[in-house]
Image 1 (cartoon, rainbow, N blue to C red):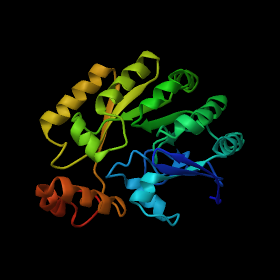
Image 2: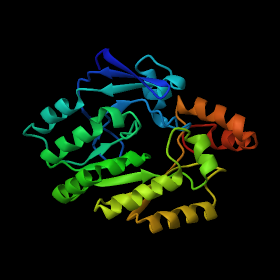
Image 3: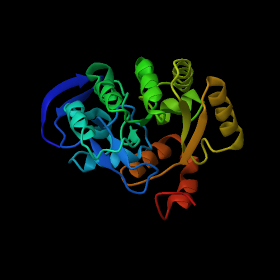
Image 4: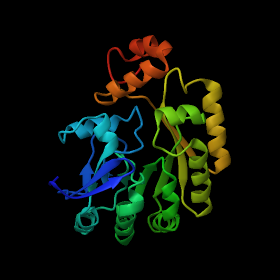
Length: 268
């Protein structure tokens, strides 16, 4: 990734335009082979985000810098066009939003995700897109068209909890849960295959049967065709930020987390 050359101020943070060397990246050990992220860093500022550590690769910190310093890959549409035009490209599913939310607020200004969806459509390449943002509804018609052409495109809207106070605390920059569920309904009405991703499940906070049952029920009522989940992962970068938040907001749970995550990134 090259140096920054264009800078914007955005909602208390900074956005740096950079030129990347590649758009799509190969992935190992995941249920998909290819990933695409038009941005690095995320103003949703989710305390648990496993992608925080990626900012450290660039010489920034995984706390405030990850939340306030966003790198926008301004040449992503051109790179994507070149990569999808290669004869050997097999039109496999590309996961969009694995390390940053492709519809975080700055997308409203730069429209990198939208421009890249146009390229995916032109090359009949399906995507599996994950977001917490209601901005995804802006591109509902485009996503519906991509689904119709590829037959394998799907949007996943992440809803971690139905509790608006908990969501505001643990995901301070993301839209409230009710707004995300409304986005699910609007996407479904537009003909976009859409599921709800219950992620991550937070021990002691969102993991009891009643809470999870209510969330699945709400997803179904909103029109979600699928529900998937994953459990909390406390990798370096995320671990420090999440534990500081936990100590401040839920100190009674610190012992539980020490037992669950004392030996690794995942709970038993």
